[in-house]
Each structure stands twice: as C-alpha cells, then as structure tokens.
Length: 294
Ligand code: ARG
Ligand code: MN
Ligand code: MN
Image 1: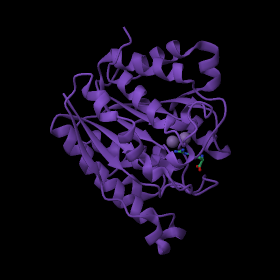
Image 2: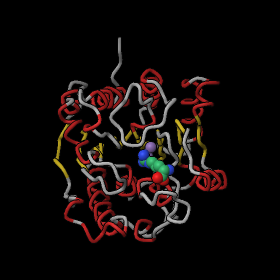
Image 3: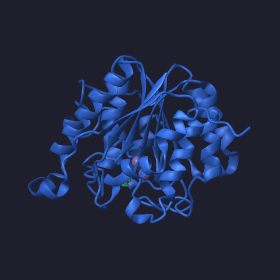
C-alpha cells in the first residue's frame, strides 16, 4: 500500500498567480516524511509537465482550455497507472481544474466515490460561469457537462454519477450554478449544515450515502477551510470549515479504510508567507491516511 505523490503545478484554471507553487509548498511542509512516518512507502515522482502561462499568450482568450485539457490528459494517465500499479496517488495541485484528470484517472478501472471539500461547487459550465475560470467547472466536467474537450479527457463520457459525489463546506455559489447544482441531484453540505449539525454527523451521513462504492477519493480544495486559518488560497470565502472540523472529517474518512486517492488543490504560497496553508494540508492528509493522536 504505497503512496505516490504527483505534482501538478497548473495555475491555468484561474487568474491569481502562485497556485503553481503548491507542489513545492507541500514538499517543503514535509508531506512525504509525514506519510512515511505513518508506515507508508512513499514515492514522489516529481511534477508532471505543465505549460507556464507566460508563454501561452495566444491561449489566454481561450481560457487556456487546450493546455488544461493536455494537462488533465497527463494527470489522467498518471492516476490510472498509479492505481493499476497498486499505489494510492496524492495529486498536489495546482488549481482545481486538474481534478478532471485525477478523478478521471483513478476511476479508469473501477468506480470511486468522491468527497469534495470546497467553499464552491465548481459546477459551472462555460454558459453559467460569471468568470470563465475553468477551475470553477471541474466537477461539472466530471459529470459530463460543459466543454467537450474536458468531458472527453482520458475516456469518453461522464466519470462520476451524481450519487457518487458529496460536497462539503459550500458557502459561495454563483446564481446559475446554484440552480444547476439543485437540479443535479448532487448532495451538498453547506456551512449552515455543519454549524447546525456538527461535522461528525455530516461526515458519517456523507459516508453512508457513498456506501455503494468501495473506494474513496478526497478532493481537498483548501479554500473550503476558513481563510483565517488557511490564508494561502486564491479564492477566499469567509466563514469556512475550521481546522478542527477538517481534522475530524479526515479522521472519520480514515476510519473507513476506503481512502485510495486524494487531491490537494488551490494552495497559493505567495499569499501565505509562513507556508501555514501547506503545513495544515499536510496534517489533514496525514489524518486522512490514518494518523491518530493517541
Ligand atoms: N464559482 C466561481 C467561478 O466559477 C469560483 C470558483 C472557485 N473554484 C475553485 N476551485 N476554487 O469562477
Ligand atoms: Mn474548488
Ligand atoms: Mn474553492
């Protein structure tokens, strides 16, 4: 049960500079040592090739769709081979657009359920998006909606059913995105749900709803956490999941023994001079992979 760390320094899915430094921030924060300390064999295969936006002038008006598609193809193949070789891949982003490749790849052979921790739904289509940023469209693409170039990454068609995915931490949806999400049948837990019912109840209910699958993928967008605790993210939304709530969620996920892969995305170390966000991400990942306090 080895873990394979895969760096995906993509920042093309959004406008802020600095998310491409996420893989380095996670390495400096000690992700590999933390996980090998838990008894895992960990291999870091370095960063996948990602074009630098400064040399993609002509693609800007296309929102870098051709390059994002190419990156997601590469991520898909890396995820597929990691799983088929018996590794549990951890995809270190980069922005959330790379999840089109990572979740596609890890579901190539067998389906998986996904827990998507995020302030946002990432459920826009090019028509519904007010910004045009592709990181806000990743989940829609995985369900077969939006740019055909993204829907067809790795293999044709949708990569997830609505019943395979749970969103946790929602608090900022665009008007049309909200309607789309309601119509989709995807279960989303908002900050209100967490405040009223507590993270433990939400986590257990979420896992119960995903019990038809035997493999779990966690897609951790650090902006799901509260920006007071996790300042190094590009698209901040106040009133988020606390560090303690996120820890509890990861621990309850670890208890299932079903976690097989993970994304850690949207870390922007430029906005975070002490690398606090990456350090917190390392602790949460360790908990998801079974670290216990006592
Ligand atoms: N909903 C907004 C948009 O479509 C924000 C998306 C933020 N996504 C993210 N992965 N942080 O642009
Ligand atoms: Mn996201
Ligand atoms: Mn987000």
